[in-house]
Length: 305
Image (cartoon, rainbow, N blue to C red; front, top):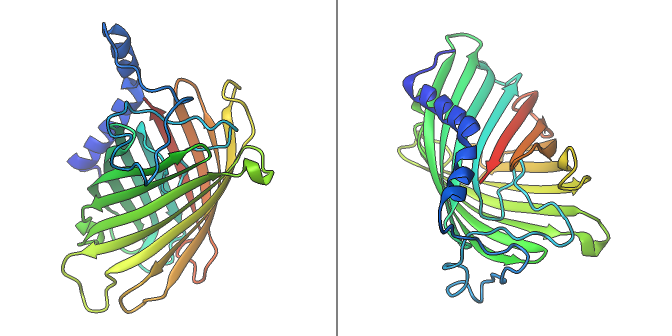
């Protein structure tokens, strides 16, 4: 596997996130007059009715769910709340259904920063490499910028709108810029008798921008429905240990294969591992045929700040 200068930069960014995460909190402690965020327990409600008047001038804060239902970032579903985090994701497809590639691997590093209670910006660097069946392995890096707007944030429910633009990865055959628009939601299911259970869902539209070959798709639609159950307390050895399942589907809506869909089910686990750190892992299992790959492994590491 070759590491070009951009991929080395991505790996350096990941290393920086792992080793430099204590410094923001240390800097805040050394400041004479630190700005204190709003208390998560007494945050005002954000709704569409007060979209233009509420939240834009508030300090960043994330609401604590009073019932302890898991309102957290998972592996695949679009996140429904604003964040301040460093996140590293690794994904590997094994047994790819292709005459060219046997494996596809992706490593990315993301930095997200909530500016207030309504708006978050993020930057992602991606590094992808393939295990070839016939030729030399290939690798490529690309980048993405994104914004998230909090539409609704009330006790037990929240919705956010996400927009993301991803640059091409031409070495791997992707010559198009991808624009993604997604609506993400979350619901506490306690009132339905499900203690510490959260329901997540999103729908996303991908638009592929640039010169197309005849029959190539220009759009697709993806959706995700996920359930998560938290089993332990925030101060347990495995903090807020959570199990979850995610059903994810992508359907081509244009091109020669319009109507084709690929669906996967991803069971996973998530736990806090101290000082605002989170570790997640899951396995992608394709459920539609022909299967695009045999199985996929996902591992995510998050530092909240």
